[in-house]
Image 1 (cartoon, rainbow, N blue to C red):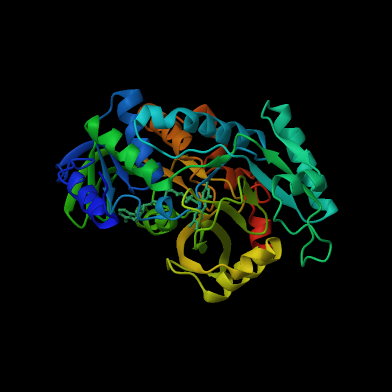
Image 2 (cartoon, rainbow, N blue to C red; image 1 turned 60 degrees about the vertical axis):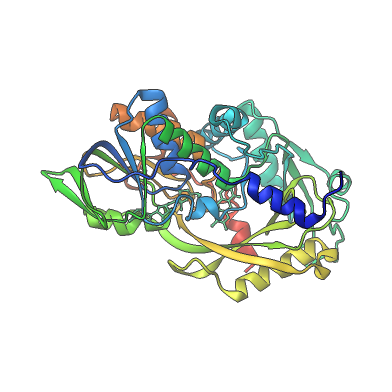
Length: 417
Ligand code: FAD
């Protein structure tokens, strides 16, 4: 039997009617054991592991908009663990390991693809720094290796390897286990999993202030009224400082606008993720997904300046001259919260019972599973999980910073501007 495209589309629409919602529409109760502020990947995974690993399910996730409206639904979906320092590498590799089994755990198609992440070096100094990074990674048992220019050319034939390029490439390194993963499926999978374990997912509920008693948090004020709680965790990315200030303390965070964009779909031509002055991968639909730089000023906008987009395109056309003929389909941006050392802030705060997972900047998507596991244990036991001890807020007082500027590609993002 033959079907026209229109009748097939109609059959598909009919077939997809009546699907149950992925989680219950929940109204806030008067009191919870734990409140999580922010329905992005970090808030949702923390709620899921509180219930799954610690049996704490009297938990609500309070999201001022809708699930995944923040950076979790806006990122370029790159997952990798090729950082420099021990605490970061161990943490991000634990996250990558969790990603490897996450689709099975959450029973959802995450389109997880370990196609390899290639970092490009734009000078001899950078090549030397990458060599050091590869040695540090291998020292911790994490496979990665340097790539010669010829090997890069074989892996990515359309790449401009000419010395006449605006920024000639000198070599690079690869982590074969790195790749991409569908971002909104991660958020939906954790939300559905948490809901199934009894967690309330409450959308359209903005936290505006805290209820404190003798230096201890006892609840929050929200757009839906007061909600009491034993413990509260903040996972609000670019809004972290606004809420920390309401609770009476400061965080060393800067909020910047980070852009991404996609082109029209083309035939398969890029089967790795490239991380350079801009980063690029090809989606299953064929679009080139491009991550650019940050705008030059602090902002809570989710749009991004045209000048930054233009510079990103100039950099991508320098890498791939054949992209000059591609149409640009969509552009968007997120509010990313950077710490001075480009590592996150995780754990306790100066307010008793108030926890934070923030400062995730442009690198927090890959960290969502490990962030959730470690924050859940930290909240359940009121003691930092060993994997995140080094990421405490106190490091900015003690000076024990974990400088991951180069591994977080921050030096490169600013280099295109
Ligand atoms: P979010 O997902 O932003 O969630 C925070 C939530 O808190 C939001 O939904 C917001 O509405 C809510 N909220 C805020 N204030 C309140 C309030 N008062 N009350 C209630 N709710 C509130 N990372 C990678 O690892 N790989 C990448 O390739 C990558 N690319 C990126 C590209 C772009 C363009 C951007 C913007 C980011 C990128 N990132 C990447 C970074 C990554 O997306 C973030 O670090 C990560 O998603 C942060 O997750 P989160 O849950 O902390 O925050």
